[in-house]
Length: 597
Image 1: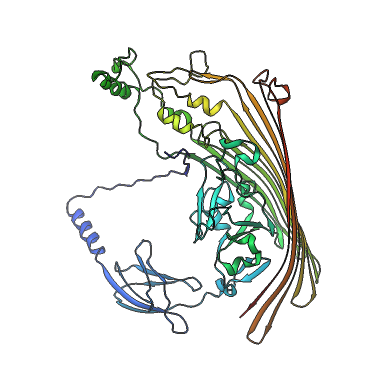
Image 2: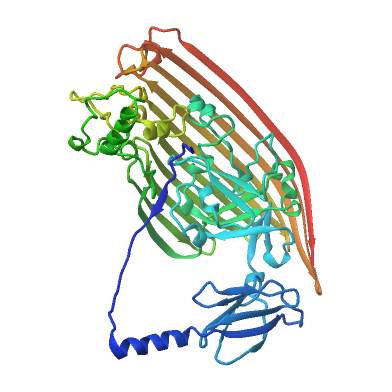
């Protein structure tokens, strides 16, 4: 049984229109309907401007899912309705639409889409025309990112990028997605891709509860449940480039072995100031739950075992007609969760200086009671053309997230207990305390108590960005110098109170706190020269980069605190546990790239 709660964001709107037709009108309508369904076979060949066949072009009947792709000779055959429209499309070519009347053979020439081929895409340490890019890559713009309701940036890759697999690792709000580019690259190490935002490498990939001193209750082993990308506001993103093959990722060396995701944020544009508000409200719920017996059905089931001598008679269950539905434990621990996000941004500038500033707030309830994720972030991007030969720029982002993680992913089996606890046990006693009744040999802990009794809180703060200068000493030669930084701090609190749930007893409370901090800086310089001689175009880039990352953590834990209202480990009467650790890593590299067409 998969213990992870699956959440589905939904919006329901159904409009039904019905009309009853009888007599001759019905006959006429029926005749017209069947006439419109008569198939018309259309064949053709699709070529480009040079006369070569276009292999794998899409031929689709407009408004339907009826379509084919061209074969090795650029040929196709498709059955369509008379009067329909064929849509012919292929990457890098202008899409054509052809109205079908009585045509049976078509000769179609596709024209190159110069706008698409001239589109500039981000690559490692620079940009390039899409027509000049030989490596395998996938591009996503802000319209793709707005195609669904997402909390984290990594969720936007689900089902939208060819060759990229994104699987949610948890049902908890703010949880991460496991990203694999062109399959699993390794089984013994982290296989997550390298994330680079505005040239700065994202720190903390593949985090789990153990990284914050929360133990296996949040992310067993190497499973990542806490997303390093959840601190980033997706609404600030203008494009994402996923570099997939060796030629595309080679510039990053071993760091890019699992693929590279290049993320570009919005920047200012010359013109009058433009103010924008983006808001979103959504609800989430389980679209399907397991069909379990209610109390009356369970009583009949139990009495069948009593009648054959497999169980002893229960006075409480002996007359099912006196019983109601009992406790539906799935309904008790799951909820319809509200999610809302708000962002205000300003964008504008002059020919010399452009700016983009934004502030956002997002809050998402979990579909399991008690879980919650919220994020506050501000961003500033500034570009200034001080001289014809000198440009300065900076990017700065501060974000703060708060998470109530609960036990949805724990080895304590919250969802399992909600499915195996009998419906005759109430949630609360008459005095308002959690029920601790054990009946008919069932000794499961109260699932609602299990969901709400522990505090598992995580606060993360991150400041990241860069400062750069671009110097153009001669025409077509640019020297780019950049200092990037990523400063993070987190505090994780876990409090476990004393509880007595029948046979499930915790006779001592405990409190643990861990604080983590990390700093990352990188310095890079690279020269880029773009030249063309007659029909020969070339780009040469030579660069250097170095970076260093430091981290440290301290933790303290204690038991037997005087009150559940006080979570200070220093006040416990048990034996305190103190932990401390630190480490660092660094890298220096040189790289070069040349392109010619």
